[in-house]
Image 1 (cartoon, rainbow, N blue to C red):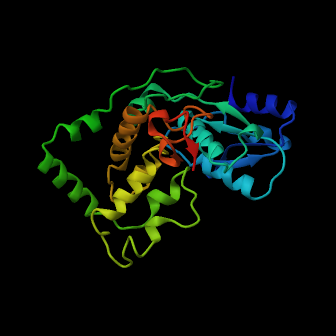
Image 2 (image 1 turned 60 degrees about the horizontal axis):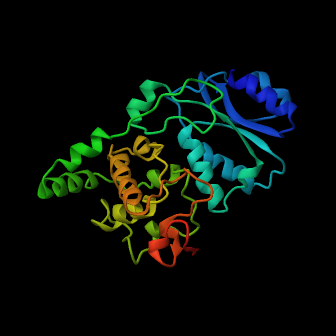
Length: 268
């Protein structure tokens, strides 16, 4: 089944719009299609053109658009939608996901452990990469070497906020990265280690491994490697994976007896 065919099916079932991709000047860009526009939907999702789909869905809901929408989503997009649903940023029940599986080539490039959504409508399932070679490479360094590596990476930071701005699960009205008590204004690169550690801690239980932060970084800082490691630690300590389960609350967003996390603590 193609994306266009699935969109037709959803419109027949009563959705009000479908967030898919429209070819404009040779580039596929996100577009909220109505029923009369369905023939303009791109049949495929090019691997080299990626967008924060879940963040766009959030903005659609914030705009006050009523009704149910379909959304073309890869595995990481679905995980982001689940996280936003748990955090009250979108109404997950008003979504119908058109699941697109990533190719083996894309999965290997991303070192993605689950390069497919819960239901696949387009593409074929590839089991993904269980071990990140990029993470292991950094882990293999001695302590001093690893510190020097990250210091050199962060020294190239322009503090452009591109990593934060493109992140589909970043939505705070007041961002700690703009708190002058934590991050000095006018300091480039930002003071070590506050800026990047603040964001890494914030991402530890939210990062859905889309890699858009790293792709948008003009300095090429390997942010995905850093966040993959943070996510691994949360998985090991709390048995929690962002975007894996709508009913499972983040261990870093709860209070209570930690021995009961993630299922038994009270939501903060």
